[in-house]
Image 1 (cartoon, rainbow, N blue to C red):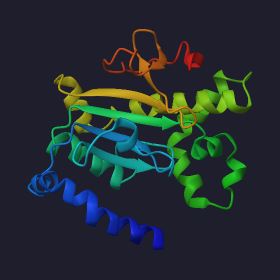
Image 2: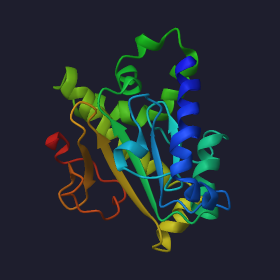
Image 3: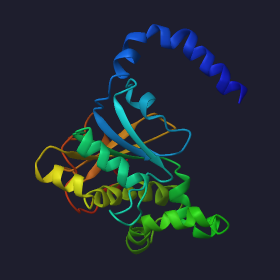
Length: 223
């Protein structure tokens, strides 16, 4: 806690003063560029990775960057997505997984969360990911299996996004785009799903068009 308090003091004494004009402007409202859906993992910092400022990203975080299908859970995910798209006019939604994701590891090893009933129940919203891995990646194991699970999960959650009315309406009107990313903690690289090549490629090389509706990975091992 002392570290957090020292950080607040540093922020107020130095950083806030240097950007006072920005914060005064933000006090009158927000106009973020994108909804960024990612994992709660403490190693993932969306603003650091994207080098964005306060007010640039509307962020939704949970274990495993999971988006329950619309109506499956009446909670924060539904409300956050709806507000971002319908109220804030977000034009881009990014679902960003990351290497070494503990939630995806638990999805592959359900016995590891046997004493964590809330976590086990939450991971049921990624059952489609688990089933895809079980039936299509039987020859993989270890780190390769985990990485492919992380990537497949990003695409599954994008499909779940499409079930949300505000998202469906935005997509139909052509005013909304969905993007799938994977962040490599150990290298700092970010890979984006390229709909033209049907694989994850370095974000600066990947086509930045919308991820098309259900299309399983043909070359998910590209990372």
